[in-house]
Image (cartoon, rainbow, N blue to C red):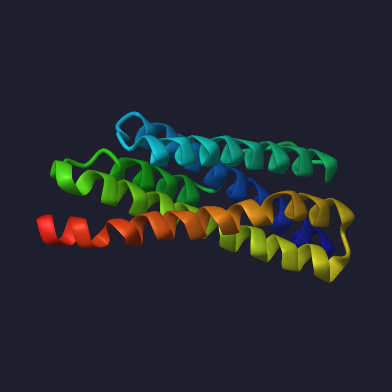
Length: 162
């Protein structure tokens, strides 16, 4: 039974890693067309933090005697669909809105994953997991909060001009 738990945790960590990597890729795509300088600076910072979160996961996987590997086929398909959503033709006035929506969805997934990992680390008292979560959780909360705020602040303009 213990082997199944260890295997599940390894798979979960690799899926978290895939989500973080896909998130960084999404930020890179969005940054190629972001024209709002304040938003651009924020997204660049979030991208750098997201890349850091991936490195934290890689270190955690190695610390737990594993090697970062591929996520499940289902998770890879989900991440590919998220990235593809950023490439769909959308009227110019809605592009930034849709980009922010996609980033928020990805960050909500990240936030949930780190919360779950925190519960796992708390339940088994694993200091490596607890340390990793403490390095990332506040960033994830801030990403969700600030992306939601950016999206909501643009809602009247986007909806009234669309």
